[in-house]
Structures are given as C-alpha cells and as structure tokens.
Image (cartoon, rainbow, N blue to C red; front, side):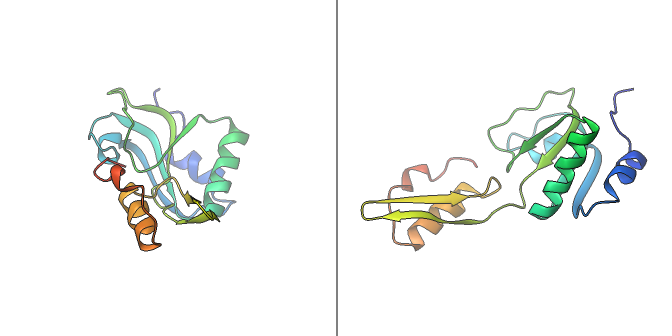
Length: 139
C-alpha cells in the first residue's frame, strides 16, 4: 500500500502528453544523493527538457500527486523510509549563462542541475573572479 502510483497508472496519465526522459519506480535515492543515503522514491522522474518537465508537473498537479524536485542530489538528506510520491530530478538542466552584466557587477543564471564547479569554470572563462572560494563545495 506504500506506492501512490504504479507503472501502469503512470503510463496512462503521462502517455497523452510529451514527457521524454527517464522514469524509475521504487528507485533507491541513495543512487542519486551525494551522501549516498536514502530509501526508495515511489517514482523517480528525470525529464530531458523543459517541455517534458512542464507536462509532468501539469499531470502531477491535476492528479494531486505529491512531488519534490531535486537538483544534483547534494545538500539533501533522504530518510531510509524513502519518498512518498514523485521525485523529479533536474540533473539534466545544466545550462549557465550571464543574466545581467553591468560596469562593476555580473549576475549569472544557472539551472538547478548545474554543478557548482561548472559554474565557477564558466565565470572564470568569461573573465570574472570572485567565485573561486566556492571551489570544492559539493554541488
């Protein structure tokens, strides 16, 4: 009685919509966290693109299925009992760019799956400094 939704029902409610990406059932969260701890998620979805993410979120909201989103799996703890509902991993969302640039300030945009090291390297490649102190932090 733990599973909120099974594979067949998931396919029925998702199939009318475009939802590309990886979906796993009763997926151990320890495979997706930096600390390698955590019980199973009823459903672990890893959408490939924003259209798929939007469609998955629309279905979950329509069906009132609980969900949480995670980035790369750092800075989270998952209990041994796992996660009830759907875990949406945004690890495929790794784009970073300059959001705003002024004379003495720059603001970066980074999607939630962007590794911190990638963002630091990107800022250095653009000729900016100040993020070096974040090197070595997981994420």
